[in-house]
Image (tube, rainbow, N blue to C red; front, side, top):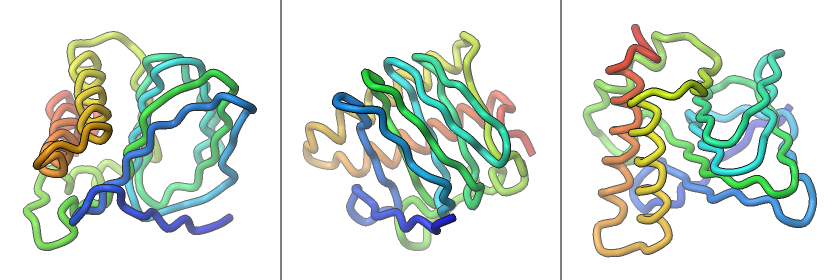
Length: 165
């Protein structure tokens, strides 16, 4: 198993955004771990996550949260599209208040799959779209908006006790 080193795509932060699209052939990522948390939103198609002995078959509109340092691998069939966010608790790459993120360590869950319709899930889907647009357009202060949106995603999970202490 390899220890993946995540290179941030947002300046002065630990956040990486990856717009994933499988067009030519099925793709996969072999077993790995990393220090960052991971949230993946599947826009279209399907995706398989294997997380610490569990197999999760994602469907379009599913969202999965994977805790840091949890072994996982993926398989993505042709025609799948999604948005991947990876980040450390310190989103700014410096000394920043991270009270919202303390609960993640205390939750001690390897992963959480959000599949059922709820107001929270609709809100999270919209936030992912905003993040994708900010990353694509890269207008002035886009990095500030992306950081705020990541905190909003985590706030949704916390407020709705998906990642409760």
